[in-house]
Length: 183
Image 1 (cartoon, rainbow, N blue to C red):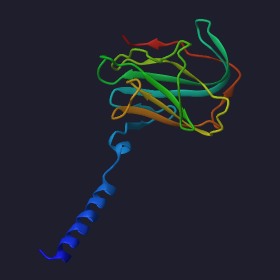
Image 2 (image 1 turned 90 degrees about the horizontal axis):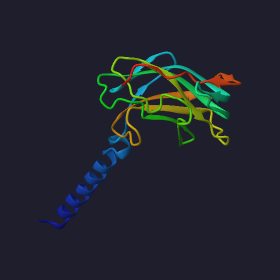
Image 3 (image 1 turned 120 degrees about the horizontal axis):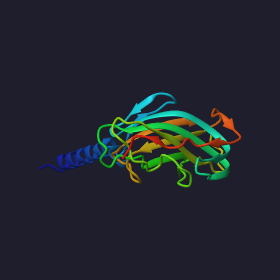
Image 4 (image 1 turned 90 degrees about the vertical axis):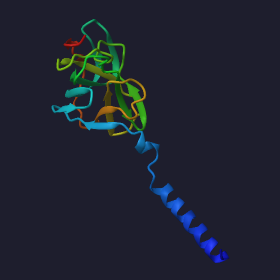
């Protein structure tokens, strides 16, 4: 084979390999979650959860029906949630608030929906409380809910974008007691 043909074939194969590498999606796409968008008052249906964000407020003090109280700046989210098709291992395991790339989990201290077992088609109502960081200057945050805890890659998640400047503010807020179906 002629020398120029070998060089031409070699360069062509390198260009093709480079092109394939550029168009192949990375792990951020191939392992991304399946996101369902949520809005206040609208029902969001994921593969395992049916969720409605009923209300969102920022409060300077929160309490629950058992007597727990805390001061600070809290984002309180009232939800109606149920399992979509099966009660087997259906629970609200992930309830995160993402601000400035940092993830904050819903507080486990008050009575809340976090970790609550869910019934298929039976609504469970209650609240979640997120303690807002004092150094957060972001106007936008994302709420993320999923039936699986921890790693939610390749899993169904429900997300809601929140403009923190538009969220109503209250002096104090009692979290809703957890009521409804579930196991």
